[in-house]
Length: 274
Image 1 (cartoon, rainbow, N blue to C red):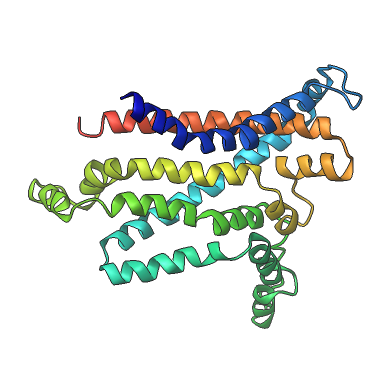
Image 2: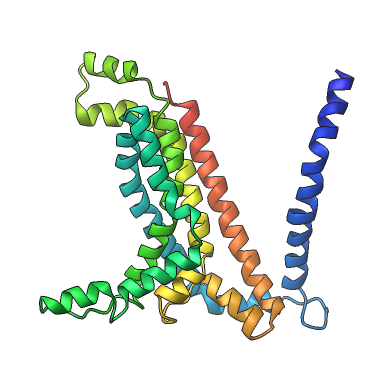
């Protein structure tokens, strides 16, 4: 037992060192800048000034929730259909889902800028039929669409991975017991797939609430989210202290959301077969 414990410590040492350098130390640096002024003196001014950014935090959370809900509504049926297909078909669908993930988010966002802009493909087609042009760039819908497009694979994959493990015999047994389409979905498929749903929600909400490039480009500078303000404070104004304070609050929001999702997932797992 002692040899095994020593071996486990040796194997885990690189990860502990990695976590200390790239997780713990940056957190301390962010906390230090949050509670100091540019001269390094302790202050609470940065925290007190966070009230000015309340509407931006609200918008960031609302946009992220909207993107997460839309992603879930679109991803859930797709993941279910994908999990019921033959193995070769699943592989093809998996490649199609992961294909956008192989490209840079910058390239994907610029591509949609060209499609949605006033002289883009959509407005050109609408103009030909006398229905355009429409204002697509610089709207909340464009920003939310960008979030959904970029992050929906992170919703599909965990849900699919869980649904693929649901045996067909379980669904057949539910049908034999009188469960119809909606009843089977509510009583069998949804409870069994809930861990994947919770993982997907977390994996979409967290990058959405902290994004800044999507809102900058598809929002055309008219929509500011928390990530945009943090970038502006650090790069444009060289105000590392205020940027760190905003980052600290954003991290708290993310940690709380992840803890809530973990709690919900834990309750789901405990009551899954009750």
